[in-house]
Image 1: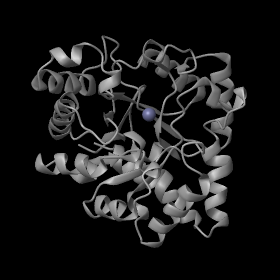
Image 2 (image 1 turned 30 degrees about the horizontal axis):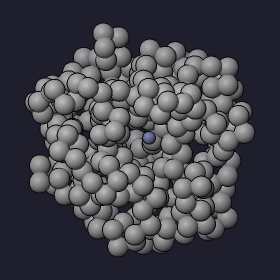
Image 3 (image 1 turned 135 degrees about the horizontal axis):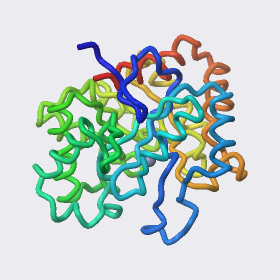
Length: 304
Ligand SMILES: [Zn+2]
């Protein structure tokens, strides 16, 4: 059977995915953990305008990595996807220790495997909408807790059973090597793994170790210049492109707050298209390389 990309509105041919943001949040509610309304993204007037602008800027696909315990709402994602005619891939998974819902502690590894596989193959919470990626599977800052190890192992097993893509969260860019090591010990296909938030890492030796292992890495906090200055993020990406790793790099902004929306005065999802890609081109990156990172790599990674 030909490989497809599993979106919230059904399976699509890989060619039907355009320039894709590999790690985003569009519908999310983290107010229960953060005690604050800023990390609440909903299908609001502001979001409608934001997505119209994003589409006009050239976006042709979103990987929405909000998972269990993060206020995921796949029905709302389907409505958004249809309204904006924009493919959206939804996620199954658990985020990281400080955000885990109660159920993570109680579940055994095999229960979690079963849950992830069911959300990928049958549907999420009775909606019939299926997840198309196992994400964002996270470790804590320079530490992988016992519960996180359990979730990582379950994610690896669910990947092997389904062939689905799997992407991770590295807290401030840390522990990518440990994540890759864990998956390698389980014999998970590195071509179906993408390691997140690597633009916050900055260790070029570690970048090369990860890339040599065959996984993708994500520069996915583009626009969050308070986390890391743009010039540094850009310099690392240009370095990796010079070294010939274009086929293993994917980009995104990881918008997580209302205050990041363009309509609210933030950088907005469109920043990748209106600011960062032009900056790459000005710095000698070719249109072909941009297409590889934004189109070819997501199509290959997301297909199963
Ligand atoms: Zn995220």
